[in-house]
Image (cartoon, rainbow, N blue to C red):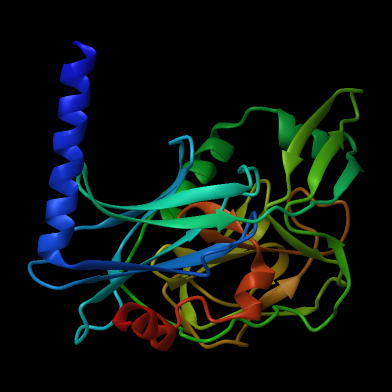
Length: 310
């Protein structure tokens, strides 16, 4: 294909997108439009006219790399506004980025954001022979559990269980590990491995009551090899909170919870070097900083409406 022909095709595609966006009067708002590495953000879309059957919001780097995407969902049945919740990977490059709004393979609108940098802590963790085996030895059951987990957090439903700020799952401020920690695991056999901590660890004694961080629906309550007794709660389309290493579980899959309801007690089940709670939040499968959910309302209908009505 010649250079001129390539440029002609690109121009036609661009004009098609512009024409579609103009005809449909598409407005896009990103809140906040300066998220830090590892933090969530909300994309609002307002369309006047015929609405495509399915829209997807995609986080794209300035170089064109697709980092994260999420299906748009209806915020209110009486409103033309749709929304998607995404999170910036903690491993992304800080700087300018774009939000694409796609209908199938067609780009129908876009918006620009700036990803802010941040510094993550580093830590080394020495594991005994038992915990080394949990991380390194292949096990079909671990694979099945991993596949099930991925199937759960990959699902973007339609239910909105909360419009509030999240609360902390425990009352203690003592944290033994932080979101985004760059970890080095020292194995008992002398080898090592690197990983990134997906959540926050609270150093609490076994038996500490664990609270649901927000209203939602329990989608998993089971024992898993690596994470021990585990609970997963769905809060918003594509947004899940995860609680690992519990000593006991007090809820069952399908239970509808309010913020603050007790879901179990802390422990040291699974791969754990001592009693603690691992608290994690996933957004469109991406691990996201839990503190951001405590600091602000992630799906603020009033703010979305205000931004899109301007």
